[in-house]
Every structure is written in structure tokens, then in C-alpha cells.
Length: 80
Image (cartoon, rainbow, N blue to C red; front, side):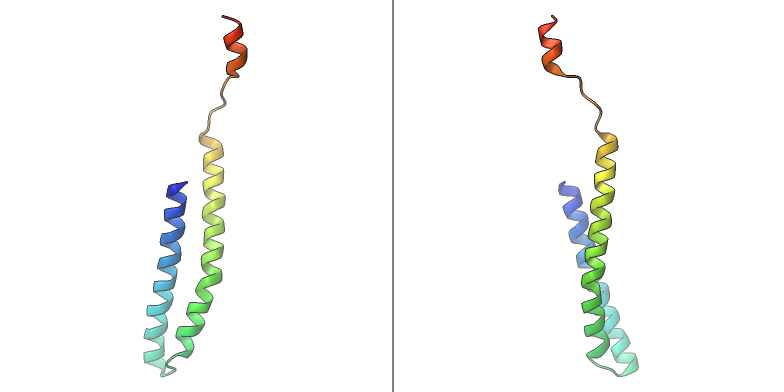
């Protein structure tokens, strides 16, 4: 679970950083100082939510596959 939280945090931080730096770069080139930066930062929020959803779904599926079935311990204790 800690690994999933770390992945979500890194993905969120990375998407915001990419949006900020790309927005600053495009605003400098195109001369639209805050417009593209604001649009990209606002657009990074839904992107982060979507990526968080996919990370959680993937982690849930992987956790379901890796957990082996356990025998019922109460039945085996009484039979000894």
C-alpha cells in the first residue's frame, strides 16, 4: 500500500512539474505569458486523478493475483 501511495505522489508531482515547465516554455515562445501555464496546470489536475485511478486499479489487480488461498486453520486444528 505504501508503494501505491508513493507512485500516486510521484505521478501527481511529476504531472504538475511538467505542466508548469511546459506552460512557462510555451508562454515564452508564443508570448501569451500566463494563459498556457494556467491552462496546463488546471489540466494536470484531472490527469492526475485519472492516473491515480489507473494506478489503484492496477495495484488492486496485482494484489488479487499474488495472494495465495489459505487453508482454513480452524478445521486443521481440530483434526490433529
